[in-house]
Length: 153
Image (cartoon, rainbow, N blue to C red; front, side):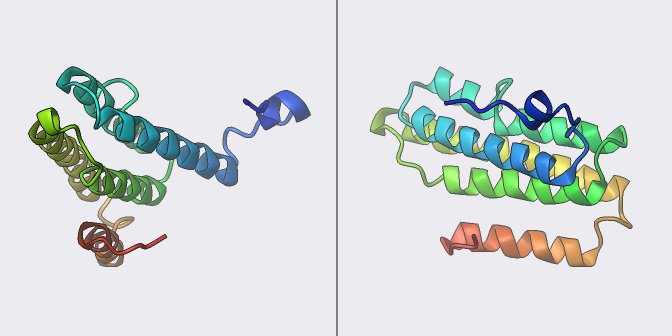
């Protein structure tokens, strides 16, 4: 069931309202997570598409970074979103993969994580005042919890 967006029902442009941006991002992450769970059971080509293709975590990360670089989104919001994407990939690494493609899954998830981590690193270099030591500590903490299996959310 697809609900109409608020702009269609109210005539209000919600594209720059923070709560709508957050909701859309969370919904995108949920959809990506579901796709990754299914992809883990698929052949390598499907895994690659889900992890690195046009509607993948890497593509979403690229989109939010481009929004920060163009001034459409703050660097801080982008940083938090990139950390959430990395967290999603950390969880995806643990998804059960078909035995035949288990090694492929692990390698492709790691490749995706590397690409997104590079985007975060570049974002931190481009916006050092917005993504300070406190942000870096937050990112390490969230990712550390995911990598050790702790539930942070």
